[in-house]
Length: 317
Picture 1: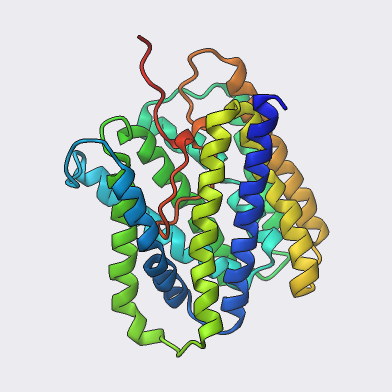
Picture 2: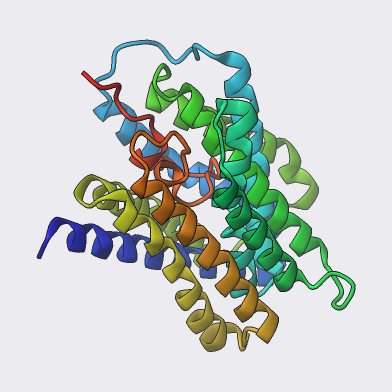
């Protein structure tokens, strides 16, 4: 098996595990647990994994960020992303949430202009516009009742893209463990402060499900890192869209959710525009647009996982 085939396989496994992780979130949300409670326990059970990560990190330095203001912005974005994504998965059909979250790479292209000083040419702008039109097809404003979950999914897509672009800006100078730990700690503190307002006693099986969420996110993150380390980004990146297949299958099997025609058409438009941007970037030498290298799950700050595609490329020697 070639390296690209192995990378694609690792990515498919990673995103399959992530999709299963999202099913558990939806099951817990259907049990009337607040996203605050789900996020809190997900972070709590992730700390042993974060400790393992810390023990393996040989990079010298402290845990004090070199870019505190950017780190604050990224941390806030990751906390908002985690809460909104968990809420959206709890109340919306899985396929619909994924369709909206798939807009993140398009938003990364836009946000890279003011934050990274990128230049986006006409063809890529057209692809972004077409992709965002796909989001409107999914949402169908004016024809269907938009719920709070739709707004949450949109906020998660925007904030996830914002957090990713910040990592691209400061990742060369900040220790990976610093970028990873601050959102986790902020999520823990914020959700712990809000937990008394929404807490419901949890039976042992639901606590076990929360532990599985943390384990699945960690495992999927390791597979994703292996995918990008093994195969080319242009091959690995499009594998993210396999989640729509998992979402459709899981939605039908567990929740009796059949994706509507607007979700299918809108997803096709979003995926097509995203693939165009990925393939277009892969043909341009020295491309600085960070879509390929930020193609991952939205960073939620709930578990220690940051794919290497988020880090800046090493400067040429």
